[in-house]
Image (cartoon, rainbow, N blue to C red; front, side, top):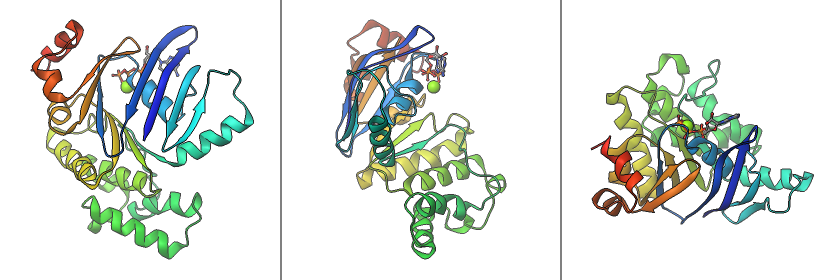
Length: 248
Ligand SMILES: Nc1ncnc2c1ncn2[C@@H]1O[C@H](COP(=O)(O)OP(=O)(O)OP(=O)(O)O)[C@@H](O)[C@H]1O
Ligand SMILES: [Mg+2]
């Protein structure tokens, strides 16, 4: 479902991603962990081409771009647009539109991007709000919701475009512990439904319990990728062991 091959990215001459490859199968949940600044967010942003890799290839659900051949063209931009349509992204800071109700937030992309008729968009939005446990909050404004509720609304909004893959960048790190679980539970439910998900997280408990595989990143590379059982029981790499020790 997701293929990233030999991704490189530098900012102002500093190499941030140094040849990352990752394949994620349909329905898999893969967690990305690693120290601050190792390139997790940059990699995630490369997967939906919010950042354009300097080199390497990315494909989502069979729609791909290949940067080996250099210049970013008009055709690449159109292909990137198609790729992004298949990806939902959830950030740490929710990013809901403050002046729109929760329902409108979830309806917006289907209305504007997919040009869905109002009634259909609304039916879809209400079903998604129900799914994330916010059926009663449809008419509220984001500021009147708890952080956990806002993040669940943000997940519903991302799902409204019917993505093939969901990407999350530390979706719970702005939340109090008691609100974290309700967000993680939504992701768990999506996993049970068969959604393909890639999650940058510091929640080791969650990563361990729910991931099919965990990738440990360091200095712009994936050092090790394994099942949680294998990674926690016997990390192959000394740096992985050192990193995980902080959490155990
Ligand atoms: N737009 C940018 N311009 C310049 N440097 C950037 C940019 N985005 C990221 N970087 C740099 O790239 C490196 C990796 O950043 P990134 O945000 O991907 O790390 P991270 O692993 O997500 O860290 P954290 O766990 O703190 O979120 C950092 O040194 C950061 O300063
Ligand atoms: Mg980050």
